[in-house]
View 1 (cartoon, rainbow, N blue to C red):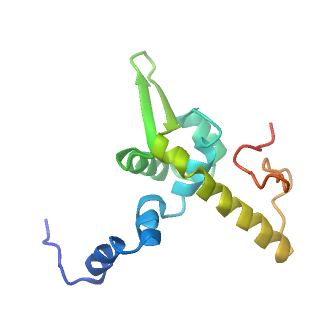
View 2 (cartoon, one colour):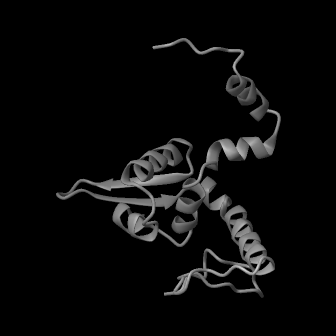
Length: 142
């Protein structure tokens, strides 16, 4: 395995993460799929297949990889029941639940920005907005 070059830009940036709270959060939930996974888990416990169905554009490799990372970071809890076939569920941990306002704020901003720029959710979108409460993750269309 190659040695890590301590003076590389990425290593320097990792040192800065300790000084900046936003960089710290992005280190934990950054990337394209992690916030989407957290958003989908905010409505409750889900099995892998339910997550895959809710996020059809994600590849199996990426979904598995991000679920493992979120579990390692303590943001989700993976529960496996010893049955055949395996029954595995994912839920938000306490730390993951504390991120719900952050994810809701991201969704609120998205809807405001889409409205401001005359964009709309795709036809038949399962998301709806409750402008009075500004909550999105708890307001999925059934």
